[in-house]
Length: 115
Image 1 (cartoon, rainbow, N blue to C red):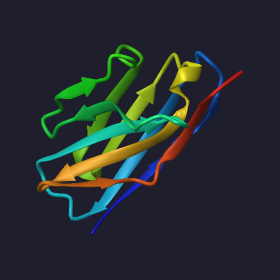
Image 2 (tube, rainbow, N blue to C red; image 1 turned 30 degrees about the vertical axis):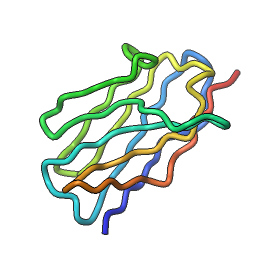
Image 3 (cartoon, helix red, strand yellow; image 1 turned 90 degrees about the vertical axis):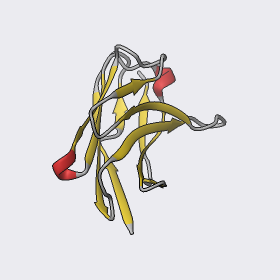
């Protein structure tokens, strides 16, 4: 069993910052890919950023230069530092881990950017 628990979401004004965290437990074996996705109301879930066990990162064009993904392998954790937030970043943010060919999702944490 794999569990992923996200935290750090909330309400923030445009231009503000948030840091999301996701801590995994259970059968997560290296090497594994971790990532953040988001889903806004009425829209499909989309990739935000991913990071490999070798710290190779990939960020969506819409967040490049504003968001930074990182990980802590000892804690089986992945983080998303979000700066210069915009209203269009409002969404439910999910973390995902891919290990041994299987993917697991967290329950999501809400990020709302509004004045």
